[in-house]
Length: 118
Image (cartoon, rainbow, N blue to C red; front, top):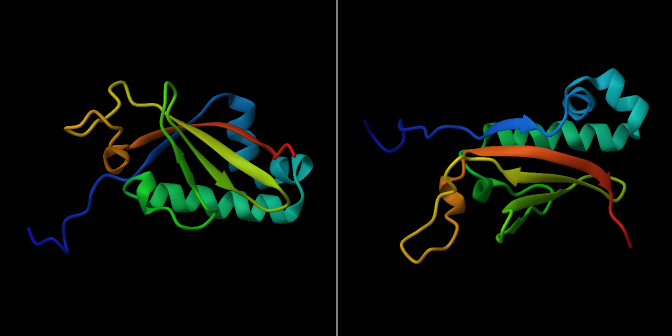
């Protein structure tokens, strides 16, 4: 198989709560919770996550990869909101040096959508 034809596994998303899943996946519910521009940016960022092979492929939303005890990805949305995701793999991938290997992260749990605190 050529490199151009080889497609890695896409990022799989889960949600911290059923209500968060509903707010993220049902536009009618989302519009009750957030402004239209926030809903649009949320839908776009979720689509970007689902289309990516790993979080390192993300560009829109100025993603911030945060290593540590609970590795996470923070993505900017419209109107000072952000999307917070935690790595949710049973075994978090590390490179030979022991650093988190973001290129092999395939599972993220959406934990919050909220306004950035000043």
